[in-house]
Image (cartoon, rainbow, N blue to C red):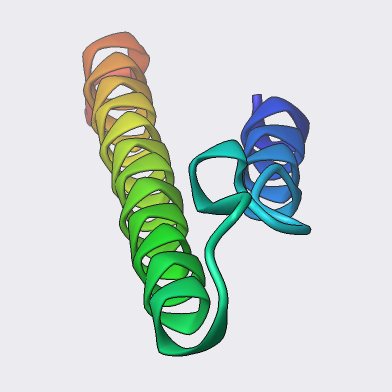
Length: 76
């Protein structure tokens, strides 16, 4: 699962390379503003993927702890 999330983060971060389709035909400050806005969107998207990754890890860890507590041998 960790590998899948890592691949997802890498793909999300690299998907924004180059000039976005919406920015074609723009020049100067307009082009820079458009590229910067795309970079901000990419950063937000990668942050959301990482947040989902952390939430999934937390749920898995909590499930594991509950399982371990339920399956332990009682003390004598």
